[in-house]
Amino acid sequence: MPIVTTKDMLLAAQANGYAVPAFNVENMEMVQAAMMAAAAQRSPLIIQTTPSTLKYASPTIFFKMAEIAALEFGVSAAIHLDHGDSFQLCSKAYRAGYSSIMIDGSQLPLEENILLTKKVIELTTPANIPVEAELGVLGGKEDSHVVADKDALYTDPAQAALFAEKTGVHSLALAVGTAHGHYKGTPVIDYERIAAVRKIVAIPLVLHGTSGVPEEAVRKAVECGISKVNYATELRDAYTNAVREILTDAKVYDPKAYGKLARQRVQEAIEHKMKLCGSNGKA
Image 1 (tube, one colour):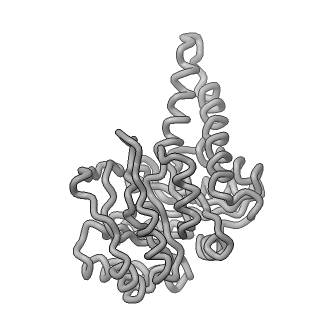
Image 2: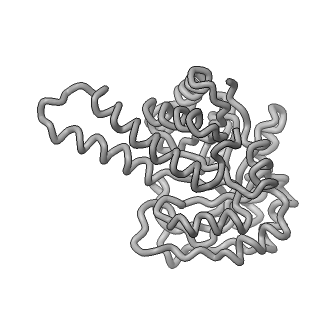
């Protein structure tokens, strides 16, 4: 199966009241785990990489892994740049073959965020590659970027409508109470804000920072209008905990031994999230 864009899968999710979970991958085993989960659950699939991951290995390497794995497991998958932090990185991922691009200008003043987002859309439009943007500022840690809780800013619905109209962006990530990384307490999601944005913004809405959010809260966010849900930290935890478990045996030295268990644990976590978001059976 080919690499596909996120556009049709997110529009289908929006129209039918479920969300497509998107999974940050860091290596071959996590790419395989995502593809195996999508095949097992017959779910649409978005895998994604952050800027720090693309410093570890290039966009071309991750694209080729995704392309080959999608063919091997018979899955239609999108590969998405998560939190693209510059026009240059967006361009690099686009030219490597990425089928969905996020430009994150949420730290910029509104007009600058609009201009940067439009510039990326102009880049990707000739190949019909959709662009995700972010409005509002999430707390927590994403790659090397840290935002204190006091500096987080919730998305303003009226600004979201203006932003969508002025940019022509294809999906929009909201700041509604979630945060990147591990939570110190229980997150409180502003469902009314999600519903208010959904009422006046036609494009699919995205929830970042979902690792550690209670399952009922995720379901309610989807009911209120979220069409894409991002997961990163929980997958890293699943992978790393499996490796730690295997390496308690000092006789283990073969990377395949802990890679296999880590892949299995990540696949299990991904399949669970697909069921939670309601994307299972929707491929």
